[in-house]
Length: 244
Length: 290
Image 1 (cartoon, rainbow over the protein chains, first blue to last red):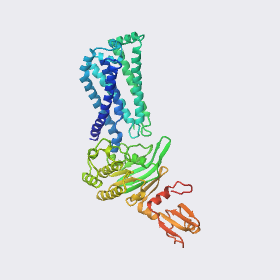
Image 2: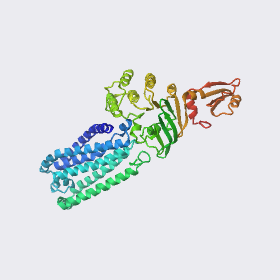
Image 3: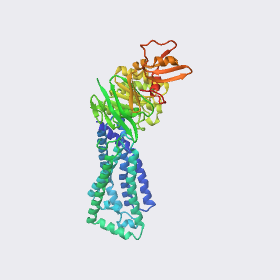
Image 4: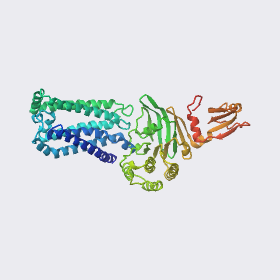
């Protein structure tokens, strides 16, 4: 019962933050489409990725203060955070399912950037996949990133660790932002375009997809393992780690 | 008898040892005054009791069972924090409703009475309330939860004098109706001196005094008179502090030798709780706090 109340409360309190972030991401999408001349599919991809990136932050803002004010215990908080995560990930998947037809339609739209039409962006890999794989991949990404956010939430349990959570979030998103920026910049260099196009073309083949998927999985597993290890050895509530 | 027992509990933050070995037992049906100077760890102890923090060492048990992540135990302990931990965008009525959902019960009748007494608008959002009214909302919740141990951390923060007086009256009334344990950490000692029936003083990370309030009031004495006579009369007892002015000496003690007749020219007055606290926790050189 207490967990149910907290899940409801988590979802309720996360909603305004999520909506606010959505507006920011929409504005970013509009800017990329109209000023940076990305095509619609890229804008949409960035938009979806932006949403995914927002989850850790949103979940990192979980509600330990409120829970502790109501004498809740850590296992209840963990359970509530996990249920919240699954609900959000599921909602994210359903949303993406709903926008998948729109995405398909946008993929046939007019490209405004010459490089965008050549399939060199790794971010278009998901768009090239069958719908089921795409949904599965998105769901897994949501779950993985949400897990990260969940850990951020745990970090903040009772100890005003939000600064730590925010720092980890900034490193996480900052790293991704740098990769995205690097890809965007590299694509602007005519000399590198053939190279990137070659990568893009290879990535579009079955073997390429398989290798990229395996690499992504490895990176994700390694990253999560590092985070879990970090949290387990972190000074969580003084001395004990996540296992406390 | 229900017991909330703290055994050898220590807690540090970074390099600072806040609590270095707390031993104290809180029993049911008492109102405790938890006293100590700024930063001695009163709030830390309350948070440890309510499982918000974990101790570095030691144990906290409620009726023999550890309180750490123990749902049954924590359902019986409520901590009203000095900070507002409820979401600012919510309404007062929502706070009452969600508390009822989480604790399974809530004294609606008492809440309605307190809302009326303190003129709290239950339709207001918390963000719109003044500091005093936010405190009142927290206090109403604390008095209405069905918990055996209610911990109040700076309960009257931001309240004006009439509301503080009203709160003390309502606290006594609800305590009489439904006896339970209140542990009040506050710096307004004189105001709670008539409420508390036991005093716990924390100093330098340990409990330095844990005594019945009436006994303490009876023990605390200020002895004034000619310096030599006062020193002679108090020669065999521990003196907390002395204050000399000319040839007159004022000595503060918990152990006045009442069995000995008071010498001529020497007077003895009872100290109130606040004076006692000041003398017990004075940090000046030469102080003999115990």
